[in-house]
Length: 286
Image 1: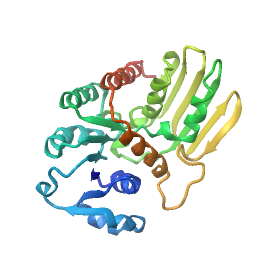
Image 2: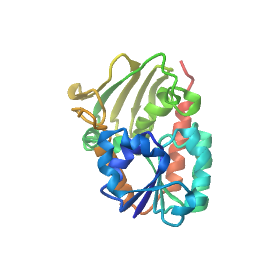
Image 3: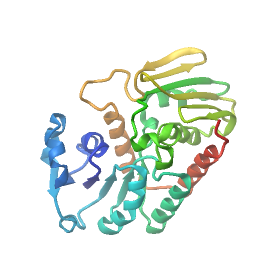
Image 4: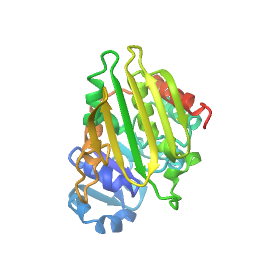
């Protein structure tokens, strides 16, 4: 299988190391050359990289297309990429567009084109997610606190709600997907602010998850199970952070491998998730 990666940020330092063992060839635009050469940890992946500077040189050679761009750019360019490269499988970043309405339109387009796609909701592949899922019997209680280091002067898109960023659309959406997949549909209490979000949801067996996410001075990820400490780290992906290694790579590899081996996409299910996201968005902000 051959993979094309579009995106010079997480596309290179996240997806490139994660897809390396799976893909036979990896196509990258020559404009990314300097970025690869400037990052020592990425140079070891050069062996499988095929550089190109014209799209026509890689036509009909792409099996998997990874788009790692911001939601607006991803939405704007996706239709063009599909028509040019005709991939068998499309990997997208979350959220797939900057709001629920545009996301539904994008899924409809992919469904009409019969394109298999996956969205990078990576928390499903973490150790703590499996721990929670395996304990959802009856009346189980989880409390999750996620503090995200934030600089008030940072104006990047990922902190701007209307661009598909912000605390709700860029960060909390990881858990909105978990709530949906685990069928936590009873909304007990929800508070949504620009710098603080609170979710209290339950499933039909009265299992309960309370989630608090906020911008903070330090990074912290903490899980309590039935009032006992279970997980305490600076990061949702690894308990111990390894210097010069993105903590998401191991989880990203599991996600890519799983999705490649899963040959079907349930468009109806994906649209139901977007509607669930939209429902939470429409709750009055406080």
